[in-house]
Image 1: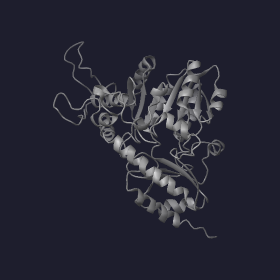
Image 2: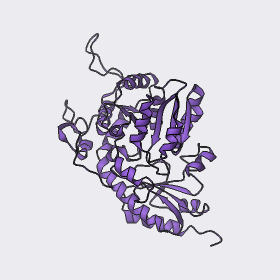
Image 3: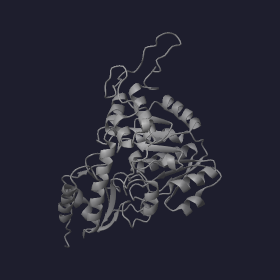
Image 4: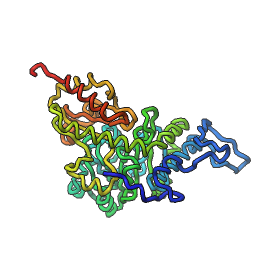
Length: 397
């Protein structure tokens, strides 16, 4: 799976490689600064009564955040983008555009924090959710009912790397006047643009690949829906979970190297995934880039790459703590998408909030590991895994 960089939808005919570097505004028109200034101001002076520079109060709008929002809207081929203090802040705001009583179909295999937000909180406000394997389109069709207002999918899914059909899901939910929401965190706009495939709204945990350096939190909603956009702006302004100027600047800085990083993440992930398949301590590897992945052809048809995420089953649950204890270069930490490679144990970390039956149905068991391949030397990462797996010896061996 390789990226076609020949097509362009950016101003001036730029390719995405150039667009991520320069953003919407290549330099500050006031000073010529190449790096977008950090407007660390809570409020802005009015020239006179009834007059405004376009910036009044930073909770509502801030120049640094606006540059980031417009840049990401451009990269995702949307008309507007809203930046929040975290990915969960973005998703929480998004749900409020739907009225209580709405039914939403959700991928069962997704980040555990999303499940906790929907199940533990929004169900109390009258929303209902159906959790299904959205990679099985027949299940999606069976789950739609008259009160269904949205379909929320992660593709590839977290952590089992299942791929859902964005085009078919969009066509189906539109027949019921609903919206398709796609969490595009795993692939980023470098590898996938769901709005081009019929999705109505794209969400990101910008903490991950967009910012890319494990040093800031951010979340985004990108869309081309004017009606939803007005409601979202009002929610963002009223609740105030907006992205701070410095964090917006960090994310903008990260996006400048998105093209280089995503390609390196993918190269490393492919090498590691194939190597893991041959290891005697590993039972099964889940990677969207495998030619025998169940939805490989679908993935190729809607994405330009497989990304940098891998999951795998160890053969023995007793080896989990041994593997995590003996990794050196790869860090045992709960996140993904940064330049450093991270290993996560979903059962105890990212998916702890999900009930056992639902976890097991999705494939999240006590032997599942998730690896976010960083941009280090691939052979160094493989050597670290080889060394750590070599120390996974039980008393019976």
